[in-house]
Image (tube, rainbow, N blue to C red):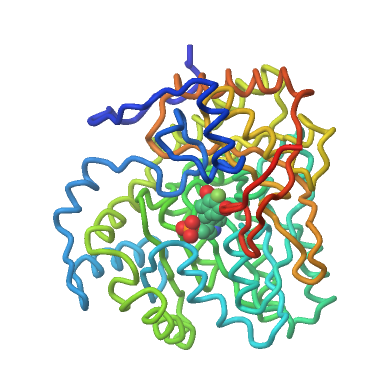
Length: 460
Ligand code: P61
């Protein structure tokens, strides 16, 4: 049946039983959670597609590496092992560990904000990156190629920058007011969409022209490398590790949530190409914020598992199966007429809820309505990536309108089978059939930063 899709390049050595709930139970559980799926207990979820962040399965090699963890506070052997791997993969001179991606962001991003109100320009900032830009006194501007807003239209690199606009933005604001350019690989918010190497090189040229730092937000840099191999001319014969190196060669700083392509449950990386001053700044800030520079918020065993996981994330067969899972789910939804960001990205299928629930305005959160309906229907937990997540304008306090309203069905690594994905697809199809009954939401409680995590909602 699934002939066109890569079979699992692993066998299952350990299982975790899942609990089933009834629709009546889920109606009560969702109400108790304030109609916010972040408030659900994971044991009340059958298939958890909230995130691929730290939710995957480690390999037997990673589990055995845990035993070698050196828990020394200073100079841990595990740190040096991880450092060797990070330097080998990136080709960079300096490395610091962090507890996860946002820890790395918090340590490094303020370095670039020399005065309040400076701009970071990204293809698209993911929400924690945007939050740390703003906490550092900067402003976040997105500059993605508009093709990504046309969810129906196939384009191999829907994560690309609009290079012309990037240059215009720099000239408009003045290069002295630009803190840096953040290249998000893959472009999470647009649908896990890749950025071509040609486009990355274009960004580098612009950074050189205006003397701006090039920062890689590379949580899924290996998935991005896979798409380059499969879709960009001239890369079909190259190893993923060689493509990754080409990506890194363009950057000055690499920040990574290692919970993604590092194949671990916790961890983050800061790698710096050669800027000594930036390295000293980060090392100094790391100590009060994350921990001593040879652990930075990770235990020795976490660093061991990550040193192995980073290599596994660059394995071609692993990536082929991973991205095929997203393709499989995406194609089965499309075949049933469910609108999605096409083609599906690396880590998730993004369901286009603007087109499913056009009767719900953006500030009543159409994608949240779909997410909640899917939980009730099938005990599947997706996540809203739209206006609910985007938040408010820091100046006016108005709800920002996201250009896209998505339900993200995120696929944890090495965790679910194609049969699980069939169950997810059936649930989404039912919600889609009954879409006219969907209703929007309003706030009962709204926190000031990253509101979607802890907000409570009320159905209208
Ligand atoms: C995710 F519901 N992503 O996609 P940390 N950069 C990028 C990310 O994708 C990212 C981070 C930095 C998550 C976790 C998440 O509202 C949410 O290790 C491109 O999570 O700190 C994280 O890395 C930050 C889920 C984040 C959410 C925010 O699921």
